[in-house]
Image (cartoon, rainbow, N blue to C red; front, side, top):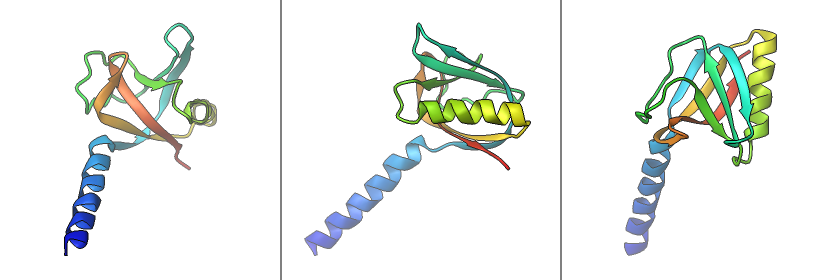
Length: 111
């Protein structure tokens, strides 16, 4: 019985921990993209109002930390979507900011 209870608590904890980070937004169009070497961050702006689930103090653009394992792929998606005129979907962290701006965890090109 203890093993089952422990397993249930673990599964519930994992689901709660994951849901804290997940804020998916669709239908955004890329307006500009820049790679900032001094801050080691990729930033971008969309034509839509900035989504800010983490209540970050600066909302002039979104931030992708270059230290993320898939930051180059996210940059590629942003540039590809911009060039192809496609919209994107993004996952924005619900509690963390990056350089005071909404922290992006995933970028998807919508087809």
